[in-house]
Length: 244
Image (cartoon, rainbow, N blue to C red; front, top):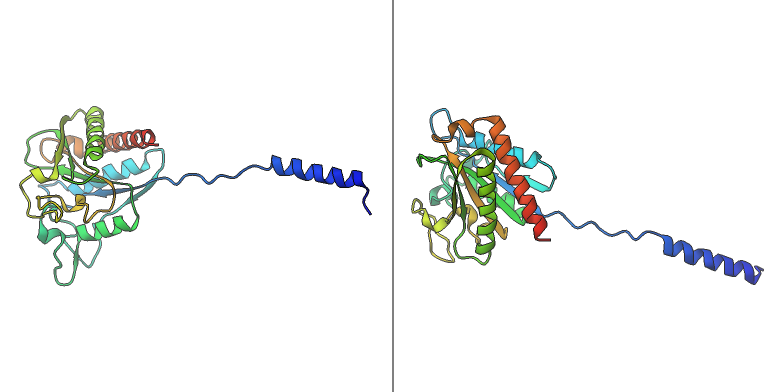
């Protein structure tokens, strides 16, 4: 039989050891970020919007810090229609089923939604504007419109500061007047990829970076593509940190 002194000593050790054991806290999950570069290859003579936007997104994703990031892209995927062309604003290129096939845009948005993203960033180039500029677009009429305007504006400013483009501000997707796709909630013309009925991410925006003629030298320069990607990523990280 153990003597009382030994029993007390064992109990004391147990208490000390237990209190000294580290408390393991689960690290907070990183927010999911989805990048959607343009998949359009039919965007001017010797100019592929898919190539420039894909390079910008790759640069952003490689820039530290590493987030929970994913790229959704239909380019090169078989069994789709308009996988490497088409407009984000035209019904025939987005919601339509052609010969039993989904569109490239529908494929990308389905893939994005499966990831349950917090932030969705589409990266495109403009054309025919004759402006070496950057435009941000957000969706009209949903409850995150104001916050999306702030985020889009910050990303636009960051790009312009990085490569010397003109800041054309943030516009609503209902104002372009060049499409026939409409949001079923508002009835307004809109971008398919930004519609809250299609895209489940609360924070979602589209960047029109440069013009395929006026900004050609910048957009096709790997070093400038890197700078643009880094600028977007670092400003996004600042925004995420401020929201904690």
